[in-house]
Image (cartoon, rainbow, N blue to C red; front, top):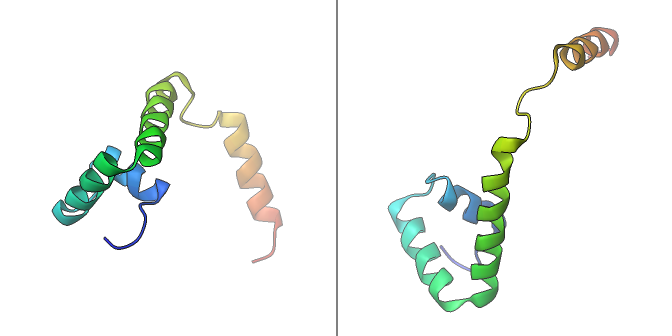
Amino acid sequence: MQGSITENQLLRYIYRETTDGENSSIGDALMLDSYLQETYRELQLAIRRLPRMRRSPSPASLQRILSYSRKVPT
């Protein structure tokens, strides 16, 4: 990886969606950059809090979305 590490790359790293090369680059960057370390910790904390949130929309919300999509011209 070249340049700075993005939050999106950190999220992929946390979710283990990165390649071996990316893992190495991100790991090296994390050891050297305290700001990146803090961002990484904040993302991990946010992810740990996610399970408390509802992950799927209510049936009423789905119906509203479907109704709206039928009305909007494509």
